[in-house]
Image (cartoon, rainbow, N blue to C red; front, side, top):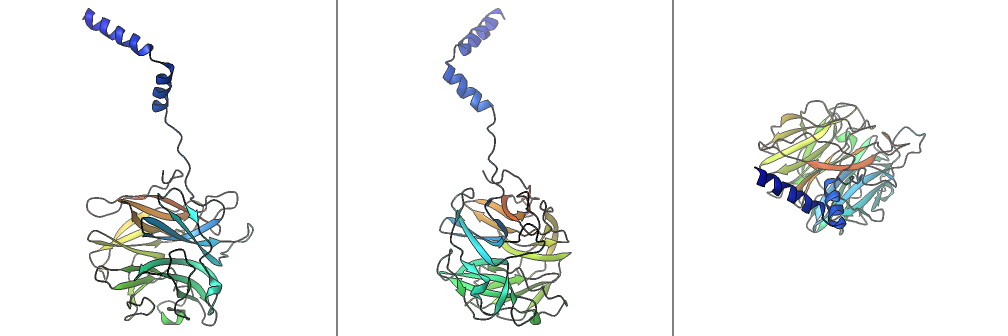
Length: 327
């Protein structure tokens, strides 16, 4: 026992004689370095309703631009923005790719939108107000590049308020989300209070069949369709102020099984609009909140990103919204 004690003392003395540099290195390893605050990802302007795609090992993020003055309590949105990243941390802003004025038949309101690639072209499904048909409408812009510039692909709206009559409101045709299934069939989902969906022709600018509806508990708006493994996921804004909930199915045509809340109310924002992507083997949840102060809020929102995790049974774990974001 005495020999063991001597060995311990000797070891302690040797450690005590460690050079100052090694001591400093040891301390730096023990003391946790403060994490960088990466949410929101854009801080020089207000951004909302983000969607994203992965193309050539780069993420392209598309967002509406909240331009409402500090004392203005409604949406003022006239253009969409695009950013790109190779690591989900550092984002490059590109020139404004699309404005509501690029649609001659629209009167304004650059609301939620989504881009998808097909046949080396990029199709942007957008929500705008129609100039001659009362209510919101869905238009399509197209570009040869994910950063644009984009131009009107159809010369008219794809969806107008008079095409959906399940509700009397004028804003039920908003928030388009698009997916191309493994068999090549493209689908468009959209809606407010009622979730609509329809097939798209291969040219991506025409419907390919009737408009259907999906019965989802407390559906408000902001559908997002994606697939992971054998499961289809339909997430959406739930109640108001909005949480994000989701349903799962083995078929894009349903039936859909409700799975519960995915994301809680996003701080200081009545709306909660999500995008879900996989990039370099990791899954991400993109959303917005009203966190940039002193003037952030429901009409001056900011895009954030946090990790998304799946359980073994395919269900998704509830999102943990963080200030640190992606490190």
